[in-house]
Image (cartoon, rainbow, N blue to C red; front, side):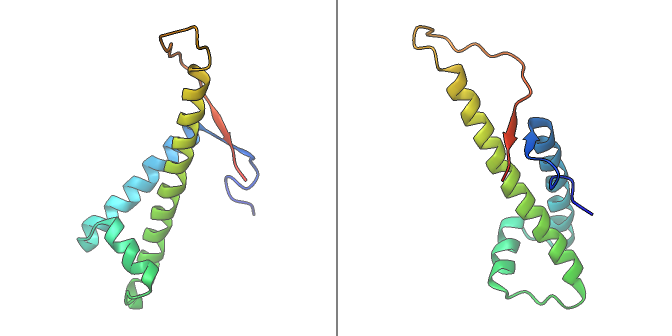
Length: 108
């Protein structure tokens, strides 16, 4: 069975923001449980120095939330940059006019 995004070649802004919310909630759950920031946890996890023993499932899930957050923050920054470039295209327009839109991002 394919995952949510394996069938899609684009991510909408709504998808990105929803994923960020879920990832943040997951990170906060583990930060409260283990009393360590997710950044510090992931540094230790990446070095392979954590005793995964009985908490292996928790640590793998925590790392998954962390990686998802990083990917979606990157996608959000990319969409924002594209939008800003689009809004500033007209050099004769000194003001930037914001208007609602639902952008999407092509994913590889």
